[in-house]
Length: 328
Image (tube, rainbow, N blue to C red; front, side):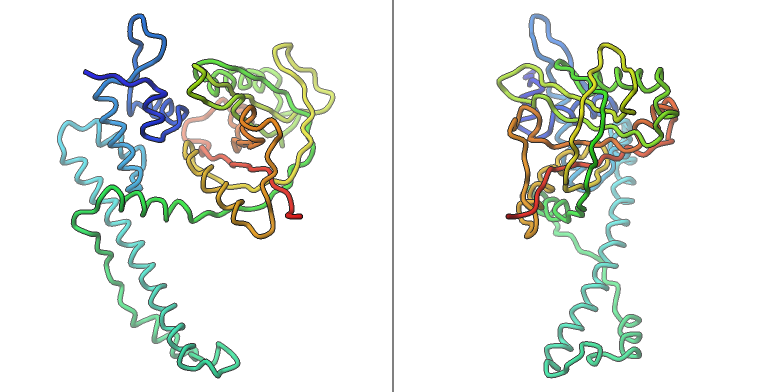
């Protein structure tokens, strides 16, 4: 049986090590330690499960349903799950078909009456009402044998429907903790979780926020990468010795909200900034050492920690924050 290291799997399948650990935490895949071997490894079965996860995610199947498919010994459960997802997609496709046909009708009307001064003259209200009632809700038809290339292209088109917004972060005083080693996000998160609960930070600062970033970024040249967490605190607050008090200058950012752990959408946000007519990226001079100045804000994190993480109580949402500046 062939084995692959975490770094090899991450590189070959273009999946972050952070996402791999998340899949492990959810019970979707499992790595192991081989005797006299420094790195964690995946066996053939784990790699096959990962391949299935990647395909199912591109087909927009939720992780909870993927796990259910893997836990069932018979394929009947997987069949029902896929049928359910197909029905939802067909409803969405039918709705998009209605919008497509209406837009097509408007285009045809404007093309035939280009001399009109007002687009409202193309179709009166009665015509619009009739049009909306008579459009057929055609079902979306998938190709019988779609290739992996076609699947990747379709997935990329959907992921590139970026909804970004511009935010201005004010200056903050933050409590910071930095860790380099295995599972750095979880280790740093546990330290900060303890700090929030023991200090009763939420009671002193209900608007406290949590930001994180790679420090340094993952690399094939190093065994471990790091993660640093900042939590905003009152200026005069005393913090434990293992934490460092820092000043964050704030700044302008392009923001995009994701569901954990869809960190691959960083790439789409960067593309959105690159193509923006008003803003340029404003990357940190430290570059990859601190993730280029990118920040990940874990929404409602301090509040969730204060409540000691109630089950099904807080959605796992993050804001991806890319530093920007006005074009010169």
